[in-house]
Image 1 (tube, rainbow, N blue to C red):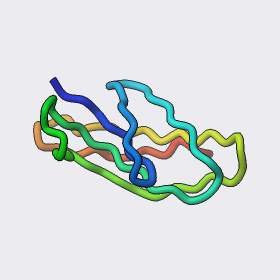
Image 2 (spheres, one colour; image 1 turned 45 degrees about the vertical axis):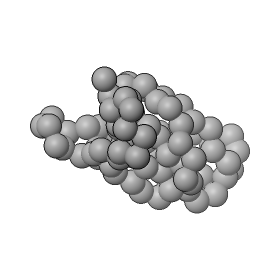
Image 3 (cartoon, rainbow, N blue to C red; image 1 turned 30 degrees about the horizontal axis):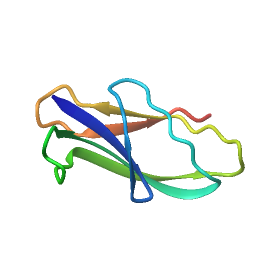
Length: 82
C-alpha cells in the first residue's frame, strides 16, 4: 500500500489520498508532495515541489496535488487561489 506525504519546509506530514490540510504561518514556504510504499522510509516517489507564500494569518491557500494517470507519472500542482 502507498502512503502520500506532504512536506512543508522540510517537515513531513502524513496525508491521505484525497484532501489533507496543513496549517502554515505567514511567509514563504516550500511544499513537496510524494508517496512511498510501506517500509521504504527514504523513498520519494513521484515527487513534485514548489514555493508558495501566505500574506497574513489566518490564510487559506488551496494547492491541489494530482498524481498523473500512468504508473511512473509525477504529481503536479494546481493553484486554486484567485
